[in-house]
Each structure stands twice: as C-alpha cells, then as structure tokens.
Length: 537
Ligand SMILES: CC(=O)SCCNC(=O)CCNC(=O)[C@H](O)C(C)(C)COP(=O)(O)OP(=O)(O)OC[C@H]1O[C@@H](n2cnc3c(N)ncnc32)[C@H](O)[C@@H]1OP(=O)(O)O
Ligand SMILES: CC(C)C(=O)C(=O)O
Image (cartoon, rainbow, N blue to C red; front, side):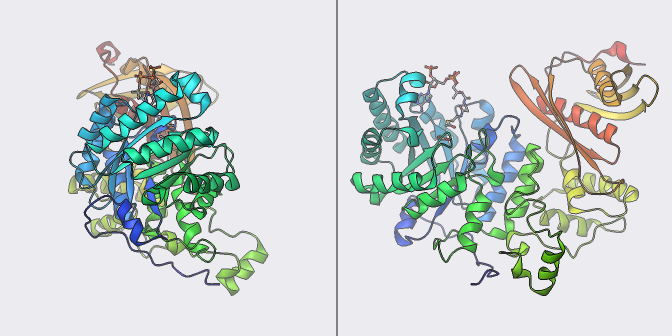
C-alpha cells in the first residue's frame, strides 16, 4: 500500500481539436472533472458571487486542471450572461460550459455567451421523471421528447460539444429514460449526464442506472456518460464514484461540495478518493491536487460559507491530531493516522512567516500561494492593511491574510459607502453608536441606539444610507485563535429578491460587523434612496 504516494498529476494543457469527449476514447480510464461551483454552487441561497469573484475562481479551476467549468446559466440574468462571457474570454485550457433549458432563447443566449471560449460546451437539460413532467413542466412525455430533440440539435449549431441531462433521472421511469437518452444521443449529444437531482439514489442504484443505460442505449459507448449527484442523504460522493465504477467517465462536482440544498459531490473528495484508493478505483483525472486547499479557501471566503471543521480533505481538522495515542503514532510514522499527506492537497507549513517586518515581495508571494494574483494597486492597499494588522497581532496567519483579502474593496465591489470612524458605548448603559461614513464622496455622521452595540451600529448605517434591504444573516467567526484573533463577520442582506453578502475582518468585532454591513450594501448596489444629508452632524 502506498498511502503517501503523491499521485502525481499534471493539468491538461495540449490544445485539442474537437470536443474533449474524444479524448476519453484514447484514455478509457480517465475521468473528466466537470466543476459546477459557479453554476450549481451559486444556486446555494446566499452564495451569489460577483463577476470578479467568479473570474478568480474560474482562473484557479483552469490552472488546477478542471476539464470543464460550468460557468453559469446565461439566460438567468444579465450578470450570469456577462460572467459566462467574461470567463470564456480568460479560461485557457478548460472547456467553458453554459447551462440552457430546451427553449430557443436559452440556447441562443448560451451560444452567444460562449462565443469567446477556446472550447465551449452547451449543457441543455429537461426533466424526465413523471413527477417533474406532470407537476412542474406540465408536459406530456411526447412533448418532452420533442423538446429534447430540438434542444440538442439547436445546441449543436453553436458548438460541437453538447451535453444533455435528464433532470431527476434517478426518479425517472427506466423505459422512458432509455427513450430520452437514445433520442439525445441520436440528435448529437456527446455527453449524457445522469443527475440525481434531489440526492435520492444510493450507490448500488446509481451504478445500476449507468449499467442499464450502457446495455440498452444504442451508441452510448460513443458518448461520455456523466454523473451529477446531490448530497441530500450524504451520499453524493459515494453515488458519483459508484456511477464511475459502472462506466461513467465524467463527474460533476463542486469545491467544498457547495450547491443547491445540501450541495453536490465535493470535487476534493472525488479527486482524492481516486488518488488515495487508486488500487480499488483505478481511474485518473488531471487535477493538480496541490491547488485544492487554495480553491477551498477561495470559495469559502468568496461565498462566506465556512468549511465545516471535520470536512473531508479540506476541513480545518482533516489533518489535525489531538489524542495521545494518535499523536504518538504520528510521531513514529505519519501513515499510522494519515492516509494522505497534507502537502498532497496543498496544505503546507509555509516557510514565509508573515509579520510586521515582512515586505511587499514576500507579501505578494504569500498571496499567490493563497490563490490571489493581485495587481499593484490592490497589493499596496492590502499591504497597508496587513501592516496595520501586524502591529496589533503577534502572528499573522494565512487565514488572517485571506480575511484581509475578503475585506471591503478587495473584491471589486464599488465602494460608494465607506466607514470612516466609529465610536460605540455599551455595557450597563443604553448601547449607542456614533458613526462617520463617506457616502458618494461626502462625509456624514449619525448617532443611533439599539438592542446592543451591533444593532446600534446597523441603525446608524440605516440613518446614513436609508434602504429597504433586510438582514438575512449575521455571522461572526474567529479567524484564528487567541484574544487578539481577528473576527470575520458575514452579513447577508436581501432587497427585492437580490441577495448580497458582505464580509469584513478586524480584531474589533463591532467595527468588523459595521464594515461587513456596509460591504453588503456596496455589493447590493442599493438603489439610492439618497443618503440623508440631514443625518450629517
Ligand atoms: C436542477 C437544476 O439545478 S436546474 C437549474 C436551476 N437553476 C435555476 O433555476 C437558476 C436560474 N433560474 C432563473 O433565473 C429563472 O428560473 C429563469 C430565468 C431560468 C426562468 O425564469 P422565469 O421565466 O421567470 O420562469 P420560472 O423560474 O418562474 O419557471 C421556470 C419555467 O421554466 C420551465 N422549465 C423548467 N425546466 C425547463 C427545461 N429544462 N426546459 C424548458 N422549460 C423548462 C418551467 O416549466 C417554467 O415554465 P412556465 O413559466 O411556463 O411554468
Ligand atoms: C441541470 C441539472 C444537471 C442539475 O443541476 C440537476 O439535475 O441537479
């Protein structure tokens, strides 16, 4: 057993003609990794990402060797269209994919958004389960079949790489599923993705469906079968791997398992399972696993969704050992309690110790290590804040630096509103806050009281920037340990159906809370509702 084999991996890079699915024919044990963090991942309530954030994630996925990046659902909004289009323009190796329903407008929008992609894919889908067809689509099965044929044929007019999915496949009648898949194959789909849309299946059934399709659909061996599993019963990764064991050669997954409801199969778990247990899962993928940890942190920082401490592969405790017998074993031989080395997923003890004496070169190198390539202006801005933090903290950890990067202004959100200064009174008196803000370039101030110091601050912000946004989530977490730890505060606001999450970190939790609230307002681009000049002190 070679548990500490680094499972050497090389990202794909050679240019190819024709759809990526052709490559599978030459390498039958290769599994394509299709990342849908930017599409299904963004469907998690509150995980909305800005264009700049999506571009950062897409670049990282591309460098990491992801085969296909599902960049969005272009018809969903102007923002989604722009994101798919911008990602198409920057991604170098990965195929860029856009989602579309079966209607002409969806397909045309996807085709247009993908125009700049070096390699593009349209992923079109329609539900095939009796429940979805009857209750949701309100269509007869024959009408669904007509839409499948239309969608796949129309998609092929935009690209030679077309994926089709029977939504809710695992609750579909098998005879109808076979008929639908056959039609999609005959109409020109090169990938047939089998979604377990509601996380209902179990490993044996997941494999059986793939085997059944391989037996019953003519020409199925000429296309790539894919699996897309949701985690409602905690079996997404197991179901996806079971599908691969039955012949699927593409896995749809997301960083940190982000996704609708309980999420999708986690990319890091799929990739590492294939690496660590290559003896029983002898399939290869092109992911550079050393970039996994940076991807996980990036997605967590951007979405504000913390990674569960005991999350496989990327959780804070995934490589931590607390109990004596384990520590003793680790000291004698790491493989007693670790089935993979932390370095394999990019968790390294950094040789760059960051502190008040560090300079810009080391800081830039550290940021690169952490997955942030920044321009000079952003470097200078973050460096000033890093120095200020280093003055207040004994040690500045990677997490502190990541938190700084997530702060106001570091994500490209326009900064119409800025916190200039804040004074708070609390304790055994009525809590109150005196806040000075810059609003559209003008400094104004207000005082407000509330149910506590944070409430007082938020009320002061509301006086200076009147808005109708509703607070959906307020969450504080310590970035590192100790009483000098930075607190990272996430604030989620909702206004007219739009959701924005703001974040800020500071050793002063109240200041971080106020800045996070203001960050969310900037990201929401609150339709001003002009700031109250009368609030000026
Ligand atoms: C399983 C999945 O994850 S699928 C992807 C889910 N993701 C999303 O829905 C996120 C983006 N969605 C959106 O922004 C919106 O839902 C839009 C823009 C796509 C559509 O918005 P609206 O036109 O307002 O429609 P709405 O969302 O209310 O309803 C969906 C419509 O699409 C239809 N529909 C659903 N799936 C499909 C399909 N694959 N092909 C064709 N029509 C479909 C529904 O039947 C419904 O039609 P109806 O309005 O005639 O009843
Ligand atoms: C669009 C499809 C693949 C999907 O996301 C699902 O069924 O969960």
